[in-house]
Amino acid sequence: MPDDRVLIMGAAGRDFHNFNVAFRSRTDCDVVAFTAAQIPDIEGRTYPPSLAGPRYPDGIPIHPESELVRLIRDLAVTRVVFAYSDVSHAAVMHRASMVLAAGADFELLGPHRTQLRSTRPVVSVCAVRTGAGKSPTTRRVGRILRRLGFRVVAVRHPMPYGDLAKQAVQRFATLDDLDRHECTVEEREEYEPLLEDGGIVYAGVDYEPILRRAEAEADILLWDGGNNDLPFFVPDLHVVVADAHRPGHELAYHPGEANARAADVVLINKVDTAPPENVLAIHHNVHALNPRAVVIEAASPIRVDDPADLRDRRVIVVEDGPTLTHGGMAHGAGWLAARRYGCKIVDPRPYAVGTIHAAYAAYPHIGPVLPALGYGPAMLHDLEQTLNAAEADLVLVGTPIDPGRFLRLNKPVRRARYDVQEIGHPTLDDLLRIRFAGGVEAAAAV
Image 1 (cartoon, one colour):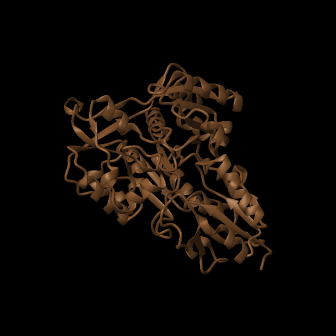
Image 2: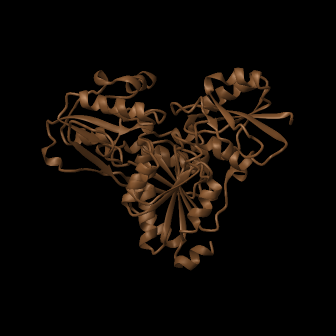
Image 3: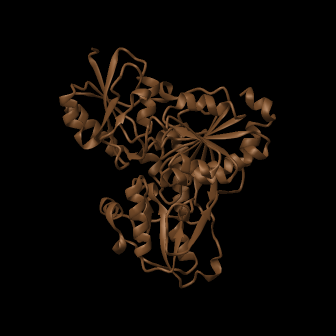
């Protein structure tokens, strides 16, 4: 039995990827456990033998992160690998201090050990924080590349919250595929808008076979990042989104700062609704971190279906869940739309039940909006019950999905939609045309 005994700290995404590419085939160390944070109900499961490989016939257990120190002691752990995102630098080092005090090494794996190389060009879209506007930027890049004549396939950062063995490689081409794969609300928020644009999306758990299947259908791959994580594939053009409402976060969060330092393009988003001094501060910080990066400013104009009759209507606002929870935001696009169109915002917290009530307790910074949490059936039930109990005229949804597709609601739904709109030049269109000016053949030679 190897003396090097590894525990991987994660949140059902980067942790599994790091294991697959950096540890699965190694014989000089044993991965004895994962720990889980951020996402509910991950712990208590097992990373399955079909994914863990022949050296792990019983799979690998997944424990709550709260048991970290005990696990280091009881499992004789010699090394802890930190492998999840959207965490402040201070929080990372607090965890490192716990590990060191317990007697183990603390490690972060870099891109040279974790990024896969594609036979196709890769444009990656990542961020310095969750909720910065990465998803609409991904859609914007995909539309531009398709207009240039490329076959574009998006590969999404993992969100494997169900049966891990069944989710090893997932392909989505229609909205019906979301039902077939039993996608959570969080998955639908990411996949649905890309599918509505006519794209194909791959995701799952094991990104080597995902990559090979996706590149067989594409001229260019579009990496759609999660949280503020680094891309899993070596990018040929690395676009990183910063949030003008959160200046300084590009310096303070892991691995968002690494993204900002590695970026080819930094897009400062939401400049239309943020103070000008915030935008200037981000310009200053990006120049100090990465003076070679091209910086683009962009707005995120919000539009609402049939806005004329919204004034004075009582609305319950639904926002993207991760943006509010570990993203740290009090509200999002739905709240801004409600304010703009003169709605009376109904506070959903008095109506919250079960897991939704627990989320408000865990994240007290959340304002009078409802996080669209739906990691499993219990959360979906509680989300539906909370919405139906609220004394409101309608539901105003600031997430990229239509909850009426999977919830039985007693109120009409209006959707607040937003896209990225660059201000001035260069634009994303300018940069992509320059980068891939020669068309499909030139892209293949990148």
